[in-house]
Amino acid sequence: MRMLPVALSASFLHQVLLSTAQVLPAVLAPAIMSDIGVPPSMAGVYFGLTACCALAGQMGCGSFIIRHGPMRMSQIALMTMALGMMIATWGNALAFILLALIGSTGAACATPASSQLLGRWSPPRLAPIVFAVKQTAVPIGLLLGGAFAPSMAARWGWRGTMLISAAACVVFVLLLQTIRFRFDDLRDPTRKFRLGDFPETMRSVLRTPSLRGLAYACFAFNGMQSVMSGYFVIYMTHIGYDLVAAGYLFSVAVMVAIPCRVLWSWLGSFHLPARLVMAGLALGMAVSALAMGFVTQSWPVVAIEAAAWVLSATALSWHGILLSETAREAPAGMVGSATGGVLSFGQMGSLACPLVYAWLLHGTGDYGIGFVVCGLPALFVGVNLLWKGRASA
Image (cartoon, rainbow, N blue to C red):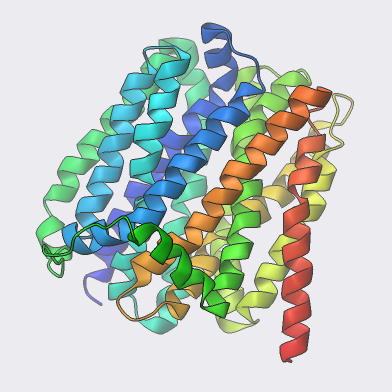
Protein backbone atom coordinates (compact mmCIF):
# COMPACT_ATOMS: atom_id res chain seq x y z
CA MET A 1 0.00 0.00 0.00
CA ARG A 2 2.83 2.41 0.79
CA MET A 3 4.17 2.01 -2.76
CA LEU A 4 0.81 2.75 -4.34
CA PRO A 5 1.27 6.56 -4.54
CA VAL A 6 4.63 6.12 -6.29
CA ALA A 7 3.26 3.51 -8.69
CA LEU A 8 0.21 5.63 -9.46
CA SER A 9 2.23 8.82 -9.98
CA ALA A 10 4.70 7.08 -12.31
CA SER A 11 1.90 5.44 -14.32
CA PHE A 12 -0.05 8.69 -14.48
CA LEU A 13 2.80 10.87 -15.76
CA HIS A 14 3.93 8.17 -18.14
CA GLN A 15 0.42 8.02 -19.64
CA VAL A 16 0.14 11.82 -19.90
CA LEU A 17 3.32 11.97 -22.00
CA LEU A 18 2.23 9.11 -24.25
CA SER A 19 -1.29 10.48 -24.75
CA THR A 20 0.04 13.91 -25.63
CA ALA A 21 2.43 12.39 -28.15
CA GLN A 22 -0.22 10.15 -29.68
CA VAL A 23 -2.70 12.99 -30.26
CA LEU A 24 -0.20 15.31 -31.97
CA PRO A 25 -0.67 13.84 -35.48
CA ALA A 26 -4.44 14.42 -35.13
CA VAL A 27 -4.25 17.92 -33.65
CA LEU A 28 -1.58 19.00 -36.12
CA ALA A 29 -3.10 17.07 -39.04
CA PRO A 30 -4.21 20.14 -41.06
CA ALA A 31 -0.70 21.61 -40.92
CA ILE A 32 1.00 18.27 -41.55
CA MET A 33 -1.25 17.31 -44.47
CA SER A 34 -0.82 20.72 -46.06
CA ASP A 35 2.95 20.41 -45.73
CA ILE A 36 3.36 16.89 -47.09
CA GLY A 37 0.48 17.08 -49.58
CA VAL A 38 -2.01 14.37 -48.60
CA PRO A 39 -5.85 14.58 -48.53
CA PRO A 40 -7.84 14.60 -45.25
CA SER A 41 -9.22 11.09 -45.84
CA MET A 42 -5.68 9.72 -45.45
CA ALA A 43 -5.81 10.58 -41.76
CA GLY A 44 -8.15 7.62 -41.30
CA VAL A 45 -5.63 5.35 -43.00
CA TYR A 46 -2.90 6.55 -40.63
CA PHE A 47 -5.05 6.03 -37.53
CA GLY A 48 -6.14 2.63 -38.81
CA LEU A 49 -2.48 1.68 -39.22
CA THR A 50 -1.65 2.86 -35.70
CA ALA A 51 -4.50 0.74 -34.36
CA CYS A 52 -3.25 -2.29 -36.30
CA CYS A 53 0.22 -1.86 -34.84
CA ALA A 54 -1.17 -1.29 -31.36
CA LEU A 55 -3.24 -4.46 -31.72
CA ALA A 56 -0.08 -6.48 -32.39
CA GLY A 57 1.68 -4.82 -29.47
CA GLN A 58 -1.11 -5.50 -26.99
CA MET A 59 -1.66 -9.08 -28.10
CA GLY A 60 2.02 -9.95 -27.72
CA CYS A 61 3.11 -7.87 -24.74
CA GLY A 62 2.08 -10.26 -21.95
CA SER A 63 5.26 -12.33 -21.98
CA PHE A 64 7.45 -9.23 -22.26
CA ILE A 65 5.81 -7.69 -19.18
CA ILE A 66 6.41 -10.87 -17.18
CA ARG A 67 10.01 -11.19 -18.42
CA HIS A 68 11.17 -7.58 -18.15
CA GLY A 69 8.74 -6.11 -15.63
CA PRO A 70 6.01 -3.49 -16.04
CA MET A 71 8.30 -0.54 -15.36
CA ARG A 72 10.82 -1.55 -18.00
CA MET A 73 8.02 -1.99 -20.53
CA SER A 74 6.75 1.47 -19.62
CA GLN A 75 10.20 2.85 -20.41
CA ILE A 76 10.24 1.00 -23.72
CA ALA A 77 6.83 2.44 -24.60
CA LEU A 78 8.13 5.97 -24.07
CA MET A 79 11.36 5.39 -25.99
CA THR A 80 9.66 3.87 -29.03
CA MET A 81 7.17 6.74 -29.15
CA ALA A 82 10.01 9.27 -28.93
CA LEU A 83 11.88 7.51 -31.74
CA GLY A 84 8.77 7.38 -33.90
CA MET A 85 8.11 11.11 -33.49
CA MET A 86 11.68 11.98 -34.37
CA ILE A 87 11.38 9.90 -37.55
CA ALA A 88 8.04 11.58 -38.38
CA THR A 89 9.80 14.95 -38.64
CA TRP A 90 11.31 13.76 -41.92
CA GLY A 91 7.98 15.01 -43.25
CA ASN A 92 6.74 12.40 -45.73
CA ALA A 93 4.21 9.57 -45.82
CA LEU A 94 6.86 6.91 -45.14
CA ALA A 95 7.93 8.72 -41.97
CA PHE A 96 4.40 8.58 -40.59
CA ILE A 97 4.12 4.91 -41.50
CA LEU A 98 7.27 4.35 -39.44
CA LEU A 99 5.80 6.43 -36.59
CA ALA A 100 2.81 4.09 -36.57
CA LEU A 101 4.94 0.95 -36.78
CA ILE A 102 7.48 1.92 -34.14
CA GLY A 103 5.63 4.30 -31.85
CA SER A 104 2.22 2.68 -31.73
CA THR A 105 3.51 -0.88 -31.34
CA GLY A 106 5.68 0.09 -28.39
CA ALA A 107 3.17 2.45 -26.79
CA ALA A 108 0.53 -0.30 -26.84
CA CYS A 109 2.38 -1.99 -23.97
CA ALA A 110 1.80 0.98 -21.67
CA THR A 111 -1.70 0.26 -20.38
CA PRO A 112 -1.22 -3.51 -19.85
CA ALA A 113 2.06 -2.76 -18.05
CA SER A 114 0.51 -0.14 -15.79
CA SER A 115 -2.45 -2.44 -15.10
CA GLN A 116 -0.03 -5.14 -13.97
CA LEU A 117 1.71 -2.58 -11.78
CA LEU A 118 -1.41 -1.07 -10.23
CA GLY A 119 -3.14 -4.44 -9.93
CA ARG A 120 -0.31 -5.53 -7.65
CA TRP A 121 -0.33 -2.51 -5.35
CA SER A 122 -4.02 -1.48 -5.28
CA PRO A 123 -6.33 -2.81 -2.54
CA PRO A 124 -9.35 -4.44 -4.26
CA ARG A 125 -11.85 -1.95 -2.82
CA LEU A 126 -9.83 1.00 -4.13
CA ALA A 127 -8.89 -0.51 -7.50
CA PRO A 128 -11.67 1.13 -9.58
CA ILE A 129 -10.80 4.59 -8.26
CA VAL A 130 -7.05 3.99 -8.65
CA PHE A 131 -7.48 2.83 -12.24
CA ALA A 132 -9.79 5.75 -12.98
CA VAL A 133 -7.35 8.31 -11.56
CA LYS A 134 -4.55 6.82 -13.61
CA GLN A 135 -6.70 6.83 -16.75
CA THR A 136 -7.50 10.53 -16.36
CA ALA A 137 -3.97 10.90 -17.71
CA VAL A 138 -5.31 10.12 -21.19
CA PRO A 139 -7.71 13.08 -21.49
CA ILE A 140 -5.18 15.31 -19.74
CA GLY A 141 -2.67 14.36 -22.43
CA LEU A 142 -5.26 15.00 -25.14
CA LEU A 143 -6.13 18.33 -23.52
CA LEU A 144 -2.48 19.40 -23.41
CA GLY A 145 -2.03 18.43 -27.04
CA GLY A 146 -5.17 20.22 -28.16
CA ALA A 147 -4.52 23.33 -26.09
CA PHE A 148 -0.83 23.91 -26.69
CA ALA A 149 0.28 22.05 -29.82
CA PRO A 150 -1.36 24.43 -32.36
CA SER A 151 0.24 27.48 -30.72
CA MET A 152 3.59 25.70 -30.44
CA ALA A 153 3.33 24.72 -34.10
CA ALA A 154 2.67 28.35 -35.03
CA ARG A 155 5.94 29.28 -33.32
CA TRP A 156 8.23 26.28 -33.94
CA GLY A 157 6.41 24.38 -36.67
CA TRP A 158 4.81 20.96 -36.35
CA ARG A 159 8.25 19.32 -36.49
CA GLY A 160 9.55 21.34 -33.54
CA THR A 161 6.41 20.54 -31.55
CA MET A 162 6.88 16.80 -32.08
CA LEU A 163 10.56 16.99 -31.16
CA ILE A 164 9.74 18.75 -27.88
CA SER A 165 7.27 15.97 -27.04
CA ALA A 166 9.87 13.33 -27.91
CA ALA A 167 12.43 14.97 -25.63
CA ALA A 168 9.97 14.98 -22.73
CA CYS A 169 9.44 11.23 -23.17
CA VAL A 170 13.19 10.56 -23.09
CA VAL A 171 13.68 12.62 -19.93
CA PHE A 172 10.94 10.71 -18.12
CA VAL A 173 12.49 7.38 -19.15
CA LEU A 174 15.62 8.42 -17.23
CA LEU A 175 13.55 9.39 -14.19
CA LEU A 176 11.75 6.03 -14.18
CA GLN A 177 15.11 4.25 -14.14
CA THR A 178 15.67 5.51 -10.57
CA ILE A 179 12.68 3.49 -9.26
CA ARG A 180 12.66 0.60 -11.69
CA PHE A 181 14.45 -1.83 -9.35
CA ARG A 182 11.60 -1.64 -6.81
CA PHE A 183 8.73 -2.26 -9.19
CA ASP A 184 10.26 -4.92 -11.44
CA ASP A 185 11.41 -7.16 -8.60
CA LEU A 186 8.89 -9.92 -9.52
CA ARG A 187 9.88 -10.20 -13.16
CA ASP A 188 10.70 -13.64 -14.55
CA PRO A 189 13.82 -13.49 -16.79
CA THR A 190 13.20 -17.07 -17.93
CA ARG A 191 9.87 -16.22 -19.56
CA LYS A 192 10.18 -16.44 -23.33
CA PHE A 193 8.08 -14.82 -26.03
CA ARG A 194 6.22 -17.27 -28.25
CA LEU A 195 4.20 -16.65 -31.40
CA GLY A 196 1.51 -18.66 -29.67
CA ASP A 197 1.09 -15.75 -27.24
CA PHE A 198 -0.96 -13.90 -29.86
CA PRO A 199 -3.80 -16.41 -30.28
CA GLU A 200 -3.60 -17.42 -26.63
CA THR A 201 -4.20 -13.83 -25.55
CA MET A 202 -7.36 -13.74 -27.64
CA ARG A 203 -8.52 -17.18 -26.51
CA SER A 204 -8.06 -16.27 -22.85
CA VAL A 205 -10.56 -13.45 -23.35
CA LEU A 206 -13.04 -15.22 -25.62
CA ARG A 207 -13.37 -18.31 -23.42
CA THR A 208 -14.20 -16.21 -20.35
CA PRO A 209 -17.76 -14.84 -20.70
CA SER A 210 -17.21 -11.85 -18.42
CA LEU A 211 -14.04 -10.81 -20.27
CA ARG A 212 -15.69 -11.45 -23.62
CA GLY A 213 -18.42 -8.92 -22.88
CA LEU A 214 -15.82 -6.38 -21.82
CA ALA A 215 -13.91 -7.00 -25.04
CA TYR A 216 -16.97 -6.29 -27.19
CA ALA A 217 -17.58 -3.07 -25.26
CA CYS A 218 -13.94 -2.07 -25.68
CA PHE A 219 -14.25 -2.55 -29.46
CA ALA A 220 -17.14 -0.10 -29.69
CA PHE A 221 -15.79 2.41 -27.16
CA ASN A 222 -12.24 2.57 -28.47
CA GLY A 223 -13.45 2.82 -32.05
CA MET A 224 -15.59 5.86 -31.26
CA GLN A 225 -12.75 7.37 -29.22
CA SER A 226 -10.41 7.05 -32.20
CA VAL A 227 -12.87 8.79 -34.50
CA MET A 228 -13.34 11.62 -31.99
CA SER A 229 -9.59 12.01 -31.41
CA GLY A 230 -8.59 11.62 -35.03
CA TYR A 231 -11.23 13.62 -36.87
CA PHE A 232 -12.72 16.26 -34.59
CA VAL A 233 -10.09 18.93 -35.35
CA ILE A 234 -10.17 18.12 -39.08
CA TYR A 235 -13.99 18.33 -38.99
CA MET A 236 -13.90 21.72 -37.28
CA THR A 237 -11.36 23.18 -39.73
CA HIS A 238 -13.54 21.90 -42.58
CA ILE A 239 -16.56 23.89 -41.36
CA GLY A 240 -14.55 27.09 -41.02
CA TYR A 241 -12.55 27.19 -37.76
CA ASP A 242 -8.81 27.84 -37.93
CA LEU A 243 -6.37 25.33 -36.43
CA VAL A 244 -5.92 27.15 -33.11
CA ALA A 245 -9.67 27.59 -32.60
CA ALA A 246 -10.36 23.96 -33.55
CA GLY A 247 -7.67 22.79 -31.14
CA TYR A 248 -9.22 24.93 -28.41
CA LEU A 249 -12.68 23.42 -29.01
CA PHE A 250 -11.13 19.96 -28.84
CA SER A 251 -9.24 20.66 -25.61
CA VAL A 252 -12.33 22.15 -23.90
CA ALA A 253 -14.35 19.09 -24.87
CA VAL A 254 -11.65 16.72 -23.66
CA MET A 255 -11.53 18.52 -20.31
CA VAL A 256 -14.92 17.01 -19.49
CA ALA A 257 -13.44 13.50 -19.63
CA ILE A 258 -11.06 14.15 -16.74
CA PRO A 259 -13.65 14.24 -13.91
CA CYS A 260 -15.98 11.86 -15.77
CA ARG A 261 -13.46 9.01 -15.72
CA VAL A 262 -13.38 9.16 -11.94
CA LEU A 263 -17.14 9.78 -11.67
CA TRP A 264 -18.13 6.70 -13.68
CA SER A 265 -15.75 4.49 -11.69
CA TRP A 266 -17.09 5.89 -8.41
CA LEU A 267 -20.66 5.19 -9.51
CA GLY A 268 -19.73 1.68 -10.68
CA SER A 269 -17.85 0.91 -7.47
CA PHE A 270 -20.24 2.14 -4.81
CA HIS A 271 -23.69 2.91 -6.22
CA LEU A 272 -24.56 1.05 -9.45
CA PRO A 273 -23.52 -2.20 -11.15
CA ALA A 274 -20.50 -1.54 -13.35
CA ARG A 275 -22.23 -3.10 -16.36
CA LEU A 276 -25.17 -0.71 -15.99
CA VAL A 277 -22.82 2.27 -15.93
CA MET A 278 -21.09 1.02 -19.08
CA ALA A 279 -24.49 0.56 -20.75
CA GLY A 280 -25.30 4.20 -20.02
CA LEU A 281 -21.94 5.27 -21.44
CA ALA A 282 -22.57 3.25 -24.61
CA LEU A 283 -26.00 4.76 -25.21
CA GLY A 284 -24.78 8.29 -24.47
CA MET A 285 -21.94 7.71 -26.90
CA ALA A 286 -24.32 6.64 -29.66
CA VAL A 287 -26.63 9.63 -29.16
CA SER A 288 -23.81 12.20 -29.08
CA ALA A 289 -22.17 10.65 -32.15
CA LEU A 290 -25.50 11.06 -33.95
CA ALA A 291 -25.58 14.73 -32.93
CA MET A 292 -22.01 15.27 -34.16
CA GLY A 293 -23.07 13.87 -37.51
CA PHE A 294 -25.32 16.88 -38.12
CA VAL A 295 -22.89 19.66 -37.10
CA THR A 296 -22.59 22.41 -39.70
CA GLN A 297 -21.05 25.87 -39.91
CA SER A 298 -24.41 27.38 -38.97
CA TRP A 299 -24.39 25.71 -35.54
CA PRO A 300 -23.54 28.04 -32.65
CA VAL A 301 -20.32 27.24 -30.82
CA VAL A 302 -22.19 26.28 -27.65
CA ALA A 303 -24.24 23.66 -29.54
CA ILE A 304 -21.12 22.13 -31.07
CA GLU A 305 -19.43 22.04 -27.69
CA ALA A 306 -22.52 20.48 -26.07
CA ALA A 307 -22.41 17.57 -28.52
CA ALA A 308 -18.66 17.29 -28.10
CA TRP A 309 -18.93 17.39 -24.29
CA VAL A 310 -21.34 14.46 -24.20
CA LEU A 311 -19.18 12.52 -26.64
CA SER A 312 -16.12 13.27 -24.52
CA ALA A 313 -17.93 12.30 -21.30
CA THR A 314 -18.67 8.89 -22.82
CA ALA A 315 -16.25 7.98 -25.63
CA LEU A 316 -13.24 9.41 -23.77
CA SER A 317 -14.27 8.43 -20.24
CA TRP A 318 -14.91 4.68 -20.07
CA HIS A 319 -11.38 3.48 -19.39
CA GLY A 320 -11.20 3.39 -15.61
CA ILE A 321 -14.35 1.37 -15.05
CA LEU A 322 -13.66 -1.04 -17.92
CA LEU A 323 -10.03 -1.63 -16.94
CA SER A 324 -10.86 -2.14 -13.26
CA GLU A 325 -13.54 -4.67 -14.26
CA THR A 326 -10.98 -6.40 -16.46
CA ALA A 327 -8.49 -6.56 -13.59
CA ARG A 328 -11.19 -7.93 -11.30
CA GLU A 329 -12.21 -10.66 -13.74
CA ALA A 330 -8.64 -11.60 -14.79
CA PRO A 331 -7.02 -14.83 -13.53
CA ALA A 332 -4.50 -14.37 -10.69
CA GLY A 333 -1.18 -13.01 -11.90
CA MET A 334 -2.49 -12.45 -15.42
CA VAL A 335 -3.86 -8.91 -15.16
CA GLY A 336 -1.44 -7.59 -17.77
CA SER A 337 -2.25 -10.34 -20.27
CA ALA A 338 -6.01 -10.09 -19.72
CA THR A 339 -5.87 -6.31 -20.09
CA GLY A 340 -3.86 -6.69 -23.27
CA GLY A 341 -6.43 -9.14 -24.61
CA VAL A 342 -9.42 -6.92 -23.89
CA LEU A 343 -7.62 -3.87 -25.25
CA SER A 344 -6.74 -5.85 -28.37
CA PHE A 345 -10.43 -5.86 -29.21
CA GLY A 346 -10.39 -2.13 -28.55
CA GLN A 347 -7.60 -1.75 -31.06
CA MET A 348 -9.68 -3.67 -33.59
CA GLY A 349 -12.29 -0.96 -33.09
CA SER A 350 -9.59 1.70 -33.48
CA LEU A 351 -8.55 0.01 -36.71
CA ALA A 352 -12.03 -0.48 -38.14
CA CYS A 353 -13.79 2.77 -37.25
CA PRO A 354 -11.26 5.30 -38.63
CA LEU A 355 -11.00 3.25 -41.84
CA VAL A 356 -14.80 3.20 -42.15
CA TYR A 357 -14.82 6.96 -41.51
CA ALA A 358 -12.12 7.50 -44.16
CA TRP A 359 -14.02 5.36 -46.68
CA LEU A 360 -17.26 7.25 -46.06
CA LEU A 361 -15.48 10.62 -46.25
CA HIS A 362 -13.76 9.67 -49.48
CA GLY A 363 -16.99 8.38 -51.01
CA THR A 364 -19.39 11.11 -49.85
CA GLY A 365 -17.29 14.13 -48.86
CA ASP A 366 -19.48 14.31 -45.74
CA TYR A 367 -17.58 14.71 -42.46
CA GLY A 368 -20.62 13.93 -40.30
CA ILE A 369 -21.84 10.59 -41.59
CA GLY A 370 -18.77 8.81 -40.24
CA PHE A 371 -19.65 9.83 -36.69
CA VAL A 372 -23.16 8.42 -37.10
CA VAL A 373 -22.05 5.08 -38.55
CA CYS A 374 -19.18 4.61 -36.10
CA GLY A 375 -21.58 5.22 -33.20
CA LEU A 376 -23.72 2.21 -34.14
CA PRO A 377 -21.53 -0.43 -32.38
CA ALA A 378 -21.89 1.56 -29.14
CA LEU A 379 -25.68 1.49 -29.56
CA PHE A 380 -25.63 -2.30 -29.91
CA VAL A 381 -23.33 -2.69 -26.89
CA GLY A 382 -25.56 -0.47 -24.76
CA VAL A 383 -28.71 -2.40 -25.65
CA ASN A 384 -26.93 -5.72 -25.08
CA LEU A 385 -25.61 -4.70 -21.65
CA LEU A 386 -29.06 -3.51 -20.59
CA TRP A 387 -30.67 -6.72 -21.82
CA LYS A 388 -28.16 -8.96 -20.01
CA GLY A 389 -28.45 -6.86 -16.86
CA ARG A 390 -32.24 -7.26 -16.97
CA ALA A 391 -31.94 -11.01 -17.58
CA SER A 392 -29.60 -11.49 -14.59
CA ALA A 393 -31.74 -9.35 -12.25
